[in-house]
Every structure is written in C-alpha cells, then in structure tokens.
Image 1 (spheres, rainbow, N blue to C red):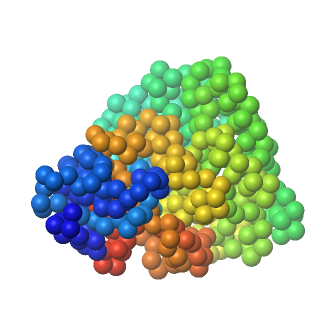
Image 2 (image 1 turned 45 degrees about the horizontal axis):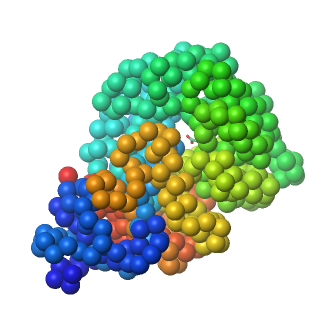
Length: 454
Ligand code: NCD
Ligand code: ZN
C-alpha cells in the first residue's frame, strides 16, 4: 500500500483510479480502503495487488466515509440574482458542505416554469461539474398560483425535472393543489409544498409569540403552516399522490405528520438545520440575519423537530440555503428578506445536535442527509450504499476538527450566514462526485476547483 503515492494534500480532480485509504464507512468498524475506478466503487478492503500503479491515494486518517449528501431544497439564484449566488458558487458551497446533488428551487427570475430554463440550469450544473444541480419546476406558472405549469414538458426535458414546488409561496388554492396532485400522479413527480396560509401571515416577519410581541413585530402563527399541512395530507390521501412538506417548523406539524404516516398517507417532510438549532430568542438583536420563512420558533418546537427527525416522522434534513445580499439583509428587521445560508454548515450542525451529543450515529446522518432525500426525489445514483458496484458519490467527514465559521472563507457569494464566529467540531474533509474530487479541505487553501476538469 505504501507503494502508491499518498498525495493527501494535492488530490487532483481527475478520475481514473482513486483509493480512499484508511476510512471508516458510516464511522463503523476498523479502517478500510475504498478503491474507485472510473467513477464506480470497485473494491472495499485492503488495496488489491493489481491496483493501477498510477492510482491516486488519498489518506483518510480513520475519518468517517458517508454517501455524498443530497439537499432537496436550495436556492442558487440563477437565473436572475447572480449577484447573490450562481450555479457555480452554489455548487462550490455544496461540494464544500459534502453534497453531491442539490435541488434548486423555482423562484428564480424568470421563474423555472419552462423546459429551456430547466435545461439551462441542469447543463450549467453539469458544466461546473462539482455537484448535480437538479432544477425544481414551479407548480404554477410564474409562481402566480393561478395556472398549472406543464409538468410533462419539464419532466420530459433534458433536465428530467422530478420535483415541482412554488417554494417561497404556498399553493393556497385547494382546488388548484388538487389538480396539481392529479396531474403529478400521472407523471409520478413529487410536489413540495411551502406550507403557509398567506392570509394569516400578511406583514408577518417573526414567529407569533412572546418575543415578537415584546419586539413589536407582526407574528406568523403556527396554524398558518399547520392548516396547510393538514389540508395537503387529506389531499394526498384522497388524490393519491406524494406530497412533501418543505421546512417543517412547528410541534403541530410534527403531530400532523405522525398522524398522516399512521394512516399510510404518502406525506414526507424535511427540516432545516436552523429550525433544529435556533429559536426566536435570536431576534432580540433585531438582526435581519435571523429573518427566515418559516420563522424561527420556540424551544418546544425545536425539541419536537429533533425528536421527529430521530424517530422518522420527519424524513430528512434540507438546508433551504437562501442567499441574499447585504442590501436585503442589513436593513430593519421587517424589511429584511427572509432566508439564511445553509450548505456549508449543515453537516456540522446535524453532527453537533445528533452525533456529538450521543443521540444518534453516522448511519442516521447518512439516512437523513443522503439516503432519504435521494429516495424521496427518486434520484437513482445518489444516497446509495457504500458498496462495490455503486457510483462513487462520497464524502469524508472529519469528526474531530474544531473550526470557526468565517464569512471570509465562504464559497457562497452571499454572507447571510447566521453562524459566523461560531465554533463547530465536525467538518467535511473531502467530497467525491462520480470518482472526481470536488472538494478537498486539505489541498492548498482548502479550495474547491473552479470547475472540475471533466
Ligand atoms: C426562501 C428564499 O429566499 O427564496 N426564503 C426563506 O426564507 N426560506 C424562500 C423559501 O424557502 O420560502
Ligand atoms: Zn419555503
């Protein structure tokens, strides 16, 4: 094994044969080596005698090997707001966060409701080559909540759109949502709902509770989310297609999801790292950084969301990575645009809450951050077992690394990072997409390649 050059610090982006030496799949058992040839895992165990002598050997230092993470909810802002994020910078942030596939939402300008836009987003992502960027189509044309988008055309385009959402806005009209479900069923595509009854949240910028009352901010009550979750559960029951609830944020939503699952209703849900970690007490500073939709809630909501992720009531974690420029964030709280960055910090947050605390293991992280989102979105090549014959979409996690979140180090183009200055103890060390290294923390400067060489 020592025959092969341990490049460590300079792992190239090239494919060919790569050996991930001394890694622990799912953080379990003894160190092993994973050999990858032409993008596929070809061997697990001691490096085979006949391995390509020009193979690149990457020293894993007994770190944790996970399937590449999958994020089913990000906003990469292209087309339209390339000043805040692009497919390239978003892909860099994703690779740095351990992700090999992301789904970018339809609330772009123009809205992602035409095959040509979906195809251009998908093609740009492939050209950048750091992460598979799957475009999400809007449910309604122009996100206007009036006419359905032509799901079939987007599904059959080169982008193969498999998920539709008006995220940022709720499909409030129940009859339209019913028709969307019937249409989606025939095509077997997923509908993802931003659950917010807008009639109850007009002018709201914070969770409706004591903090908002004290600060004089208009509140968004839990029921504005829960009433839509309940309605969509019943629609999914009666019209028989899958509905996915974006960014679940309340104790009541957890109760409704639990009920729906006991009824066998095909309802799935995600939770964001920020709703698992932060409460509305953060608003005391009036810092627009903490404005987000749905709003940060109270500690019992956080506890219920954590419990629900642990017991499977909530299926997965999604970051809702929502970049905004300082002109939209460094303003009065009510005028700040809602949204926070998430791609570069999510693994560290999930590890802190669940693994470092002893509540769960790395198998759990693999499930909620890779396997489940890939299953819900029906992605064939991600979230797969770490096994021979599987695509080499992988991430190496360093569970013993103290690092401080620093805006100057972000790959993202925006700086609305609510964790700046905060210390974490788990960090992504390496990300591999189909056998290509897309991020190597230990390479010079810890940089992501500008665009992968393939
Ligand atoms: C998102 C955005 O900025 O596009 N904002 C947010 O607060 N989450 C939209 C959304 O996910 O609702
Ligand atoms: Zn949303």
